[in-house]
Every structure is written in structure tokens, then in C-alpha cells.
Length: 416
Image (tube, rainbow, N blue to C red; front, side, top):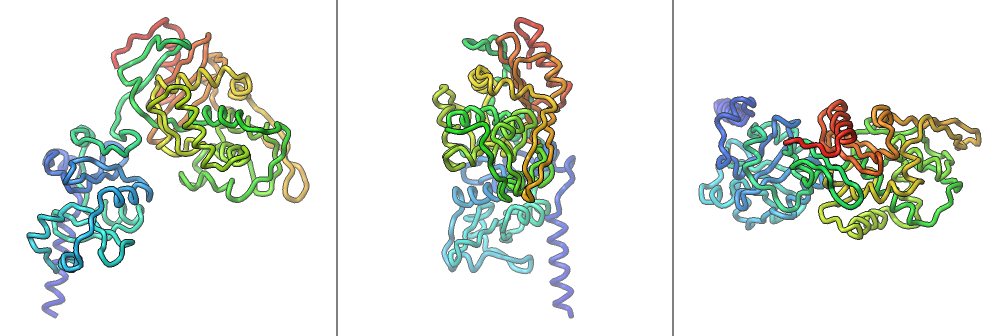
């Protein structure tokens, strides 16, 4: 009984010591040097989880299973079987100081099973199983991570594998006349998530394929489920598509560019005569052909925050894309209605609603918007022969104000 009570005391005490500090306490007590080998939560930006490598002193953003796997592959280390057996897995045990010095804060791969990985917490010397992202974030990160603000996190350099910096706090904009950037702010070359602006490049690459606008394709479960592989089901912009529907390519086209349907983008790529993987490679190939160095796509819808570009580079993409009336006209479609043939042979009417009311009210020749939490609000338009783009805006009003000012001013001289 005595041993049980003692063990319970040790476990409870360890939990209390590891329990996260509140944001204000953490941000006043923790310095950048204290973070090496720690997990941290970015309290000013959605409690994003980061790992700080104690060897390179670089920060790693962890927001899905791919990030976890990449981290393990890049920085994971494997101790000897004897060393591994001495690493504490519970508060009642103690990791030897020599091993704590060697492995504290490191990502540990089991020498006996490469599929089992751990984080050795430097604060208590205990190994915590990593598992999948949801487990690691909710069961480990929320318990032992330090709470820090963005300014402290920015003092640590990003690792070189990241697509963009999630600590970015600002707005990027640019104005492009087809030859020169005529107006831009200091963030116009910052790499940022594109969100659904990605579909502009998707449209260009699809037009390079062989297709028939009136060809009918049959919708599969895989195509309906595609958005759920990247975002929470039911939270993305879609049109009313159902498994077994037969729908024409031209209707999917409008659905993608007017309603920003992510399913439509995936279906079009799926029926482009190549694999979706090759389709994305062609998106990146076209970016290189345009001379772009910071633009990168990993999928065709924009639901991944790893689809990135800069305001200046994407302005050049938009200029090329909007020169094609098939793209420009589709972005301006409003209340477009078409019929699908359902799996039971009956027809159903589907309406494509273009919700870019405030952008369309500016009278653009073409336009596209996008939103992700990581991207905030993006929009690009063509007006009077010029491309105007605003990225990472924090509200529709802010986005529209910047675009309106750039339309009405020959050059917008803003300091930020």
C-alpha cells in the first residue's frame, strides 16, 4: 500500500510539474535559449505545435502526420539497445545523467522497432511515445509544451524543409502590369500559402491536356472524399456533387473557378489524361517555365497550406492565366446552373454560386479568392489590364480595401 501511494504521488507530482504554464507565465519566463530540445505551442496563432531541435537550434512546425514523419526521418536518432533500455518511460524511473545529456530533447527511434518513435523530454528525462499527430498533439504536446508568443518563436531559425513560415504576421500585396511590378509592399516576396488561388494554376495545366468540354465523367467516392484528406469534412467550399453523378467537364470547370469547388479541381485533374501526381508535377513545371523560384504546389485544390508562392510571383501566374478567356470568363460566372444525371438515371439541377460578391462589384475582368487558416484571405484580380493581388489579409474588409486602393491609385505607397 505504501509503495502504491508513493508511486501515485510521484506520478501526480510529475504531471503537475509538466502541466503547461498559462500563456502569460510562459512568455515572461522562457527565453529562446530555454527552448532548445523543447516542444512549444504558438499561443498567438492557434496553439500551433513546434519542435526545437537542440542540435541545429532550428524550429519544426508540426501540423499533420506528414510533418511528424518528416521530422523523424530528418532528425530522428537511434541509440544502442543498451542505451535505449535505460531511458525512463515512467515518472518512477530515472534516465542516467550521461544519457540525458546525450539524448535530451531528441527524437528517438527504437533500435528494436524502427516504427516506434519517442521524444525524450529534457524537463523530466522521460520518453514519450510519438504515435500519430493527433495523439502527439493532444496527449503529449498539450501537456509538456512551453507556451510562447510569436516574437520569441521568430528568434529561432526555420528548418530548411518548411514551405513557409507559420509565424508570419503581415499582409502582402503587389500590382503587376505584365512587365513590371508597379506597386508592392515589403512582404510582396514573402512565401505564403495560396489556398484556392492554386486553382488558377490548376486551370492552366488542365487546358494543356486533351479533353472535350461536353465529355461526361462519373463521380466516384474517392473524388467526393478528396477534401476530407486535407481538411475537416464538411468545412470546404464545394458544389452539390454526389457519388454516381454524371457531369460534364465544362460544368466542373465553372464549379472549380466560380465556386472554388475542391472536388471539381481534383476530378478535373483526375480526368486530365494523366495521374494526379503527374498533374501536380506539371503545375510545378509550368511555374518554372514562368521563371518562378518560390512557387510550389503539392496538390491541385489549394487545401494544403504547402501550396505556396509570393504576391509578386503569383501576379505573374495570374497575368498568364487570365489572358485565356476560358479561365477569365469562368471566374466571373454567377448563378450558373447545370443538370447532372444521377446514378438512378434521373436528372438533378445544380447551381454554382459565386460568392465573391465584393470582388465582382469592383468590375474585374477576372478574379479568384482563397482562404485557409494558414493563408488567411487571399485574392487576385485583373482590372484595367493590371493584376492586383493581396495575400494574408485578416478580414474581407481589409482585403477589399487594399485591392480598391491599388485600383484607384497609380501606385499605392504603404509602409507595411
